[in-house]
Amino acid sequence: MILRRLLTGPAVPEVTPEEALRRQQAGALIVDVREPHEWRAGHIPGAVHIPLDQLAARLGELETEREIILVCRSGNRSAYATALLGKAGFGQVYNLVGGVIAWARRGLPLT
Image (cartoon, rainbow, N blue to C red; front, top):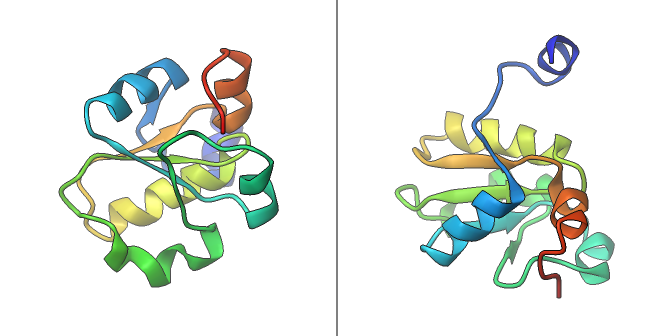
């Protein structure tokens, strides 16, 4: 945990795959920040794809008041994206712990 904080900065709010699914079903938006080839290989149904390198330029596509869960392959890039959105004024942003890897290991749906 200490090493992670040193590498990624302050801790960001996190949710488990199961909690992310429940929140998505209740109206949260999942934003996948992986690269296009990763997205094409499989993604969470209903997720929006905005690669990390485009996120700052595309913030206007997201609702600041909506709950947003960010996801990548393992949770590192999405932790950075979560911090970025938090600094940009988004009030309800969360990182999916373990990313798509954890999601798939739990047997949750992928498209």
